[in-house]
Amino acid sequence: MFASLCLRLPLLVVSLGVASALALAVPQPSPVTVALTSRRVSREEAALVRRAPARNNLPKQVPLDNIFEGTDLQWVGEIKVGTPPQSFRVIFDTGSPALLLPSTECTSTCTTQRRFDPSKSSSYVGGTRVSIYGFFTGGGVTPIYGDTSMVTVHNATETISIGGLSVKKAAVFFITEQTPLFAANPFDGIQGLSSDASGFMKGAIEQGLAPLFSMYFTPKSVGNANMLLGGIDRSKFRGDLWYASLPTDVDLSGLWALFPTGLKVNGAAVPNKDAMIIIDSGTSNVVLSTAETEAIYAKITPEIKPNPALPGTYGIPCASLRKIRSAEITFTFPSQSGRPFDLTIPSRELSVGPFKGNPELCQTLINADDRFSILGASLLKHYYTVYDMGAKRIGFAPNGV
Ligand SMILES: *[C@@H]1O[C@H](CO)[C@@H](O)[C@H](O)[C@H]1NC(C)=O
Image 1 (cartoon, rainbow, N blue to C red):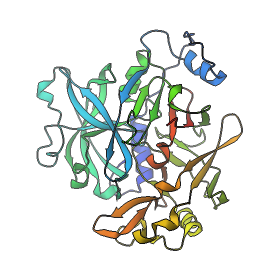
Image 2 (image 1 turned 60 degrees about the vertical axis):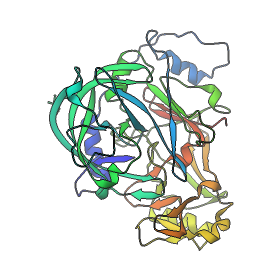
Image 3 (image 1 turned 90 degrees about the vertical axis):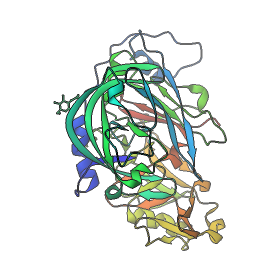
Image 4 (image 1 turned 135 degrees about the horizontal axis):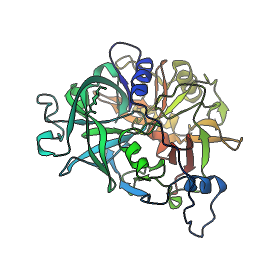
């Protein structure tokens, strides 16, 4: 999901403001050598492992479950909050900065989700700062836009435990009110994972966890999807990781984002706006500028057209789906080694299923928006991804399934 503090201002602008308020410095890593197993390790990876202090830093597995609602595009895992712990299912979201959970203070609009009860936790410290977040996402096949998917929260600190790793006094935001579209989510809350390491990750890194996490998104039929906190699992991908540096000349304010240098459909170049693209584990669809979206679709088939019922979305008659069966979309990024690398969305991701209320019209993957660009799960499910806060970079390698 791509989150921003609302109201009424353009999403990205506001989002940058919010995220910087939450941004926290990454502690300086101390160079301590950690024993490596006998497999060959690239120099880049060896440097990465060395950055972790030698105590209390074993990587933590977090099993993920795919929410399959016609498409394999959203993964959730467990998080425990409070003393004694209360459990929740959350999206681990590289597109937003903070942990948001419904609380029992949310009486009328949070009834479909598990709610945190502060009166049952001895470690709860409530704050009074109220914020309103707007979310942008493409959950399932229905894209949700900022104005319609909003939550009101207040700040607090709590003991948070993820993958068996517990952090005391971590920042959390409790939802006191939410819009119906947010309440419809098949999960309780969102654990934002910003590139600035805030909240749980900040505390975990201070306790010695290596400052990175990896995502392995597999379809429900394959299973074993997981997030690895503080580590990289080489058995989950093929070849070496390609690393792209986070841009340093823009204020990322906690986002994970890159500048693609090329865009292709079946190998043929499409004009690339050269805009920053958010790498977002909590969004299912792809969002590009209107010009890029329409240039891509024009190269595939003129039968893909805007769907005026849901502005920004496009569809193709489901009867014509065979016309998009062989269209792959490729993004090129500059790597740290100087050589560019390609990330490809296979053609089977291009249709995300019929629009709700219009079974004849199938939604196509890319939504258009001229305010920001997002690469979501339809790409990330094909790559093992490493989000490295310490070295300010993202690594990609093809999934080993
Ligand atoms: C909530 O935010 C306010 C204002 O930023 C801050 O002073 C307070 O310490 C926070 N409370 C908690 C419990 O984090």
